[in-house]
Image 1 (cartoon, rainbow, N blue to C red):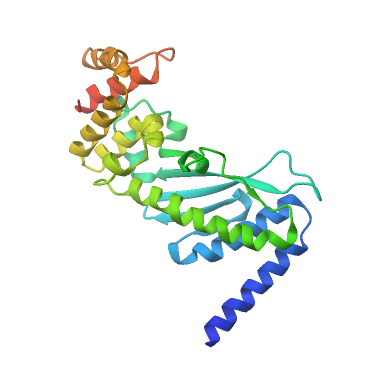
Image 2: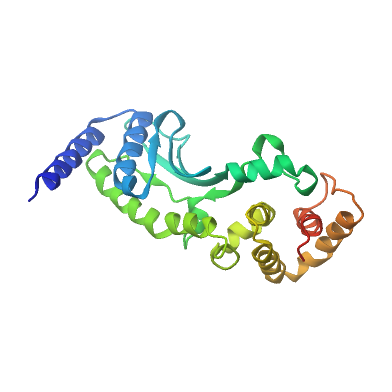
Length: 246
C-alpha cells in the first residue's frame, strides 16, 4: 500500500469515527457534507458548510448540490437529509440584464438556469432522502449515495452544461419546468438552433400545450407580455416569439 493510499484510508477512518460519534442532526449533516466533498473533490466540488451545499464552479457557472435537513429530525430518533440540484450562470445573468425585453425572469433570480430535487430524476420519483439515523451505518449510506450522485446528478449537470446536448439529453422533467430558462441560456450562448430544438421537443411532448403557446406567441409578436395569471405555456410561446425561435 502506497503512502497516499495509507493517508486516504486514515482520513476515511477518521471521518467514519467522526460521523459515528455525532448526535445532533445538524452536526451529522454537516459532517456528511464534508464526507461527500472528500469523495467528489476530484470532480471539482467543495463543501460550503454555512450554506449546506456542495458547489462546483465552471467559470461563472455554479452547479450546486444542496443538503436539506428534514424538519422531522430529532436527536437519537431521526437524522436524514434530502437533496436539491441547482444550476446558476453569471453569463445568463449578464445577458438578461442587457436584454430585459427578451426575458420574463425576475432580476433577483436572474442567474437561474434550472434545478429541482434529485429524486425527480430517479426511477421512483421520490425525494432521495439519505437516512443517517444509525451511527454505525452512516459511512455505508453515504458511499451508496455518492454512487447515486455519480449515476444521476453528475450526468445531469454535464448535459445541462453542453449546448449540443441539452435539447436531447436533459430529462423531460427539467425541460417541462425550465424550458424558457434553458432556451434563454442557449440563446445567450449563441446556440439559437439548439434553443429551437428544445422548444420543439417541449411542444411535441404534449399537444395540449399548443393553444396556450400560440396565445403567448401572439402576445410576443404584438409587443405585449403575458400577465401573471396566464399559464407557463403562454410564457413559453411569448419567449419563443421574442427570441425568434418556433
